[in-house]
Amino acid sequence: MKIALAKGRLGEDALLKFQEIGLLKSVDLNSRKLIFTTKDYELLLLKPSDVIVYVRNGKADLGVVGSDVVMEGNYGVYELLDLKFGICRFSIAAPKDTDVMGKSCLRVATKYPNVTRQYLNEQNIEIIPLQGSVELAPKAGLSDCIVDLVETGKTLQANDLEIIKDLCDVSARLICNPSSYRFLQSELSDLVEALSHD
Amino acid sequence: MTQLKLFLEHMRKENKERNRIVGILEKRNYLLFEPSYFEDYDTYLKCQGRTEKNSTIKVFKKNGEVALLRPDITMNIMDTFSEMIKSDPVRLCYDAMVFDYNHFHQERRQIGAELLNHSSFEADLEILTMARSIVDHEETIFVIGHTGYMEFLMKTLNLNPQEREELYQLVYHKQKTMVLTLLRTKDVDDVIYSKFQMILSPKAYPIADYFKDLEDASLNLIASQLNQIKEIFKDQIVVDLSLISEFEYYEGIIYTAYKKGVNEPVLKGGRYDRLSTIYGKSFPAVGFSLEVDRWIGGTLNENSFS
Image (cartoon, rainbow over all chains, first blue to last red; front, side, top):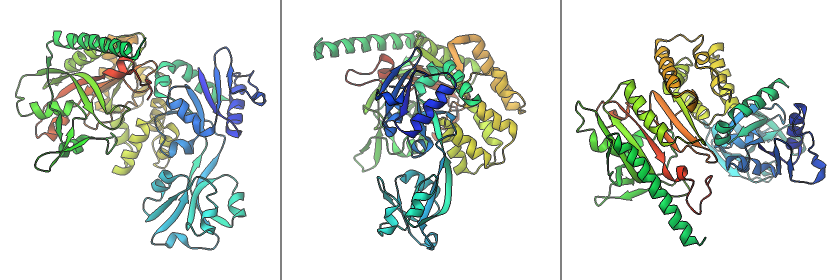
């Protein structure tokens, strides 16, 4: 079975989770290798945004991604389990002491236009798609508010923003592609059970 | 091997397989039908269901009206035969290209069979048996579901149309946590919640477990049909009650087949009695279609997963 994990914290936490149930024990993330082969598994270490691409295209059977990636419309993969780490939330944030929600047309800067549209569907909004440093947009006058992932809220605070509304929770998810779901059904069922009981 | 030789080899392989499949269908008295290249745009809009919007290839007729290059053969058959159907069942098959922007190639070949005006469970079994035999291969998995099961679960939830569609989409894409999160906002009954957990789990439960503690007359028939199918096909099929068709007109037994290494189904089928009402008629129908390129293993320059 091929498993795709992201380099960085999400992948490290995922590997720990697998190792807790006795899998991928020999994998050492400090070794700079990108492929690890054990008796039953092959582990691919990828850029976080590439994990879903490898899984969706059948080059990995399984992967671990944040649910934000799937929520943004990256369907084509099935979710097997909420791994309950990498927990954060989608929130709307705006400069402190401003009443942005009362605006007739709200300009929202975000890396997640689909999630934003879904949760603000009753509001007249203009979406300003950005690739990063979203917190800067209200200060620069580019937007009235932002929709982004918030973990501790410290980045918002440092940029004079405050949360107006939390939209939904986000966490790490074990995903697979439809073909693996069918052809590895029994193995995946056992794996999900082991990870759920841990 | 040169590119030309590879291409000719692929053509030979495809022709041989097309002949084999159409041969099976014709031997069982399914008459080969040549569909029209065009389809009425407004009619298609009424039946497009969960398919990708704006994926069709539009053409303009002489009078300025919009038509579609056929994205599907079933609707084409209904358009041709709905006026003529009276009392006898009609058995048709096809081997034709369909057109849309959804896939790597805008033209794909489908081979399929339709049994019109036959409502009995025997008709389901006749089509199902043919479909199963066509993709009878050790690297194929045949998955059976029943639309009535999800319909029943949905009925218990008291959802507005938007929530209903959202939930259908999430189940269709098997997004378990998002489904359960949505259900938790609806004060859902514990038994119903547990059934959603079961159908979205990779674990294969015995058929009876999916129906345990659920009381509804319609479920008895669904369970009985699934049990009969399981009895006939045994380990040749797996049951998945979260299976949903992308077309809303399917109702009853539905199925898909997967081939190892191909991420999308190679075959889809089931009962679609509701479709004739779009054509102003009311007669039952059941059928399947095979995606020939996916089944044969992808065309030369295309990875199977593209």
